[in-house]
Amino acid sequence: MTIETGVLAGISKDDRDSFVETEALAATSSVKILETIIQNRKVPDAAYYIGRGKVSDLKLRCEELKTNIIVFNNNLKPNQQRNLEDITGKKIIDRCTLILDIFAKHARTTEGKLQVELAQLIYFLPRLSGHGVGLAQFSGGIGARRGPGEKKLELDKRSIRNRIDFLKDKLEVVRKHRKVLRESRKSKGFLNAALVGYTNSGKSTLLNKMTGADVIVENKLFSTLDPTTRKVFMKGGQNLLLTDTVGFIRNLPAELITSFRATLEEIEFADIIVMVLDAGRLDIDIQVDAVYRELKALDVLNKPVITVLNKLDIVTPQRLLRLNNDFPEAIPVSAVKNVNIDKLLSKIALVFNELLTKS
Ligand SMILES: Nc1nc2c(ncn2[C@@H]2O[C@H](COP(=O)(O)OP(=O)(O)OP(=O)(O)O)[C@@H](O)[C@H]2O)c(=O)[nH]1
Ligand SMILES: [Mg+2]
Image (cartoon, rainbow, N blue to C red):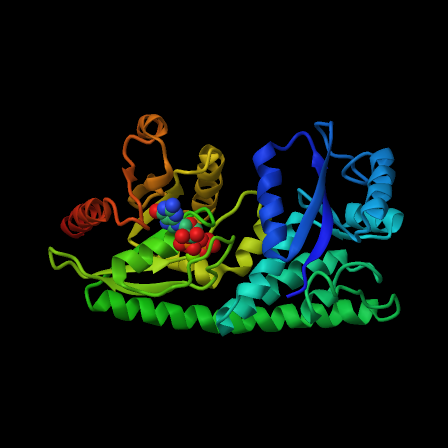
C-alpha cells in the first residue's frame, strides 16, 4: 500500500483531541501527517475556512515539505473546498472525505458497498468542480483522485443522480430483506441487543468475547461497517442475539448517516442498546455526546440502554473512581482481559427479563 504525506490544517475552535482523531483517520486512509497547522480563530472563514493569508502560508509550507495533500480537521463547504483548491493547487481533503475513503476500504458485503457508494455520491455531487475532487474517489482512493473535465460535468451530474436513485432502490430491497430476517428471529422468541458506540471503543472485541464470533478487531477507526448478529449463550436460557454495528464519530454529516439506514435499522429495531464507551479515552465526554446525538437522531433512546466502560485494563484506579462517579450506572469491563463480562451478561439478563414481563 502506498503511503502519502500531507499537512493537517484547522482552527483553534476545535479541541486538540479532534486533531489527533483526524490524524488517525488520515493514517487509516494511508496519509501520513507531517505537520499540523492551527490558525488561532474561533469562527471559520466563509470562503476558505482558514483565513486567506493563512492559505498562502499553507501552500508555501506544503511546497517546503514537498507534499501535495492538505487535510482539513473539519468538513468543508463545496465553495470552500473549490477556493482552497484554486489557490493552493493541492488536493484538499476534508474530514468527511477521509471517513468515506475509510468506509470504502472497509466495506466488504454488497450492502456495505452500496451504502458507501451512496454516501460518497451524495457527498461529492455538490463538490464536483471539473478539476478537483469527485469521481476519482471510486477509481483508486485519495492519492489517485482526478476529477472529470468541465464539459463532462453536467453529464456526470445527471448520471450520478440516476445512480443515486438506483442505489436507493437497491438498498430498499436490502432493508426489506433485513426486516424479514428480524421478524423471523422475533417469531422464534429471540430478543436482540445492539452494541453501539464510538468507533474503536471495542464493540467487535466484546461481541467476539461474548459470542465466540470472529469479527475483525483492529486498532483502526471504522473496522466494522456491516452488522454481525450472533447468539449469546445465557445461563438463564434467554434467547438473546447480539448485534455489532458500525461505530459513530463526531461531526458526521446527517446526509451521510441516512445512507447507512439499512445497517442502522439494526439499532432501531433492537430491544436493548448496549453502549460501549472507551474508558481509556480522555475525551470520553465528547464521545458520549456524539453517540447520544446519533441515538437521539435514530429515535432509540426510549429503549433500555446499558452503558459499558470498556478497556478497564488500561485505566488507573484514580481515573476509574472518577469514571464511576461520572457514569454511576455503567459496568466497567475489559473485553480483551475478559474482566466483568459475566456482570455485563447478568445485567443484560435482568433487562431482558424485565422486558419480557412488561410485554
Ligand atoms: N486495552 C484494551 N484494548 C481493547 C479492549 N477492547 C478492545 N480493545 C482494542 O481496541 C481496538 C478497537 O477494538 P474493536 O473491537 O475493533 O473496536 P470497535 O468498537 O469494533 O471499532 P470499529 O469497528 O472500528 O468502530 C483494538 O485494538 C482492540 O484490541 C480492552 O478491553 N482493553
Ligand atoms: Mg468493530
